[in-house]
Length: 181
Ligand code: IMP
Image (tube, rainbow, N blue to C red):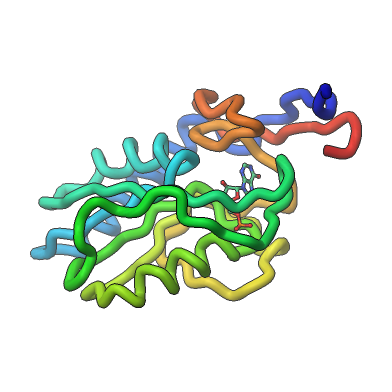
C-alpha cells in the first residue's frame, strides 16, 4: 500500500538559527542549575539530535538517560494513547530532571511523561522542548525552555521525522502532503 504523496516545503527554521537558540538555552540551563548535577532525559527518537547539540552547550557536570514512547495513531495524528516503550536505566528519585523533547503538539505525550516521572519523586522536573505548536494543544503542559513556537504545520528535520525519514536534515522544514495523510 503506498502512502500519501509528500514533498519538502519551505525551510521554517534554518540551521544557524537553531544553533544560536540551542547555545542560548544551553547557557540558560548552565546558569539555572549552577552547583547541581542534572539528569537529562532524552525522549527518543525525535529529541536525539537536539539533545546531542544541547548537552554540549551545557557547562555542568550532568548525566544522560533515554526514554521512548509511542503516541502516533497515524503518521501525523496522535492516537491519544501514550505507551512507554523504553524506560530510563537510572533511578530518577532525588534527581534534578530535565526532560528533552523534540516537539510539543497536543501535549498528551508530555503530559504522560510528566505524570510518570513526578510519581517517582525527582528533586525537580523541568521540560526543554525544541518546538511547540500551541494552537494544537489539548492539555496544558509546562515548557520551561523552548526553542521555537511554530504554526500548525507538520515539520521534519533536526531529529523530527515523517515515517522515519528526514531526521538528518540540518534545518526544520515543513512537509507538504499532496493528498490527506
Ligand atoms: P503530542 O503528544 O501530540 O504532543 O505529540 C508529541 C510527539 O508527536 C512528538 O514528540 C513528535 O514525535 C510527534 N510530532 C508532533 N508533531 C510533529 C511534527 O510536526 N513533525 C514530526 N513529529 C511530530
